[in-house]
Image (cartoon, rainbow, N blue to C red; front, side, top):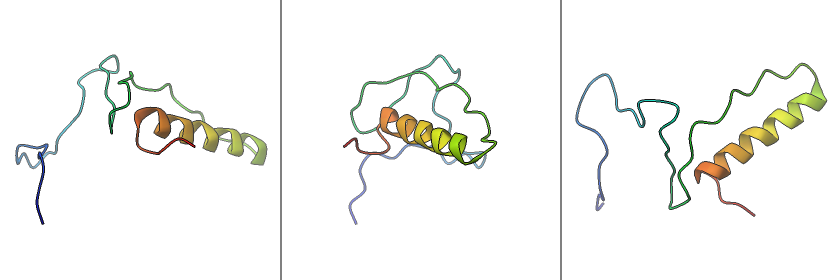
Length: 68
């Protein structure tokens, strides 16, 4: 299988994107953004739905999920 650009340097501790929460990143050509704010734990079904929707929005904003 052909391999495109590889991100990593063989460090056993892993690879990190961004050194600070103010550094912008993105995937698949979307506009880079800074780290999203913390999403607090859900305490009931209604807030769980709200929190899941916030996670979906964050993934879409970073380009990790396609938008509808």
